[in-house]
Length: 290
Image (cartoon, rainbow, N blue to C red; front, side, top):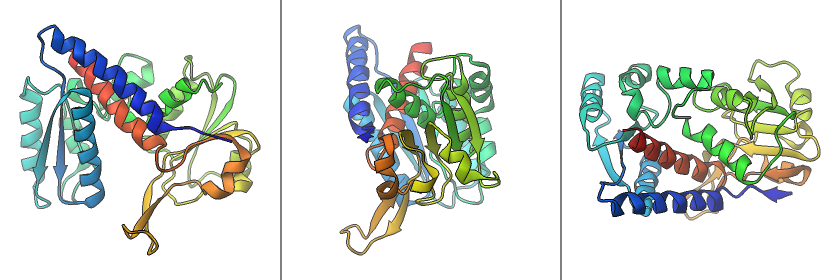
């Protein structure tokens, strides 16, 4: 078993981006700029956005964090998005999800300028992804593909089972893995909570990408020997033995599954750092396109 080290891979990506930013600044141009909108005071979201800001500082990007109250109305958030769309100093921005219940997430996604949609969630970018056209690939799927690429994991002709059909992870990674690219060219099954014979289906997979949103859902009897397992899930669960009072748990029962795998990610230092690195890649791409 070999760990897929997202921390090390993401660090290499940040170093590559930092060199590009140095060249941009040396040419007398301004660096790329990423903005993040945070509505409310959710602890996990605040922590995640804070890490994105630190990532920007590390590679030499400009960054702006826009904080809005949990009571913010949809109209107020849409007005802020319109302001960011019009701001020529900002190349890309994200609106951190989830949003408070009074705000319709779809309306927010539709309001973002596709040219600044570095999350890759708006219909134009989703459509371009499906057609194989240049686009902003959602950060988590892009990070997974980058991890497979940098570890030179063979995907062509392999059976890949994707657990979870969300628009953010499951559906786009299924498209990417089936595309005529490297990595890619896999035979993909997109499974979910209603899939019949799920255990047998997973046990037939050469590559398992698990983003089903259920803690430790994938167990050893669902994994065949030598499979590649990528765990997208991350949930905080109470743990009185930890100073923080919690621990992060993935959608894979890591201790059960690890010895059956050829490669596996760990919930900490796996897909998460690659997601953040991919957001930086998309921001640099948005800058270059302008």
